[in-house]
Structures are given as C-alpha cells and as structure tokens.
View 1: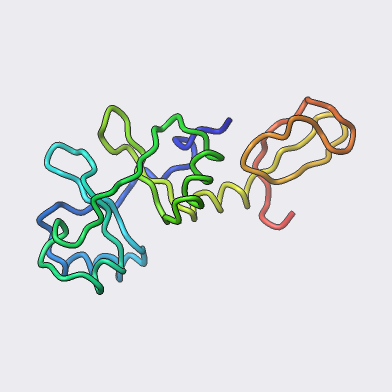
View 2: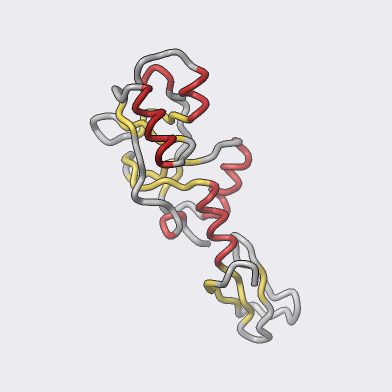
Length: 155
C-alpha cells in the first residue's frame, strides 16, 4: 500500500472562514485551481470552497458559501482507497489530516500524476503495469517479486 502522504500536496492554498468571496474568486482564478479547504483559527478543516460555490451561492465570506460536509483521510490512508473515495463521492479533492489538523491535500490530479509516473515491475521477467496498488503477482510469469518504480509517462 502506498500512503497518501507520499503523493499529497503539502503546500496547500487554504482560506479562512472570513476570507471575502471576491478574494477567493481571484485566488482560484490566478492559481488555476478549482477549490480549496477552509480552515478555522485552530487549524482544523471546517469546510471546502469551490469555484462553483463562488458563482452559485450568495454570501460575502468563505463561511457563507463553503460546503461544510468535509470528507477527510489520514496521511496513512492508501492512495488506492483515497482514489476510490474521490470517485465514489464525486469530489475533486480531500484534505489529509493528522490529529484533526490539515497536513496536506490529495486531489484527483495527484492521483493521476502517481498513476502516470509510476509502474509495478516484476523483478523476475521485467513485465510492468500501471496501477494504484501492487498486483498480487506478475501476469506474465506469476512471480510475487514486484517493485514500484518511477516511469516515464507513456512508457
């Protein structure tokens, strides 16, 4: 299992509950991101604000427009489990928390980057495949001796 702490973004753009909506819109636009966590004064995630929230909800501050239903994962959650959560909940990002405080963010693009730039390679025959979790055995020679390696995208 590959934990999300190995692939998450740690330099996360966050918003305070009192961040004005205009500022949120400007930051999302200039940073080319689709949303971000809203954190309270204690560092705990209290919401998520997205580009859709900005232009579809009425309010002056992040706390007025943010989604308060926040799904989080721990830094030791497997990337495969987190990816299934992103798909199943139809969400773009999930805050990564440790003892209740945010330590990173895992987005669909982080998962895609991991998938595109790594591969599971058989140490016996050299056959490889892409995937979020280690295969039980090589589909070519049935060996269980498989390693994760960085790969050039497309190869």
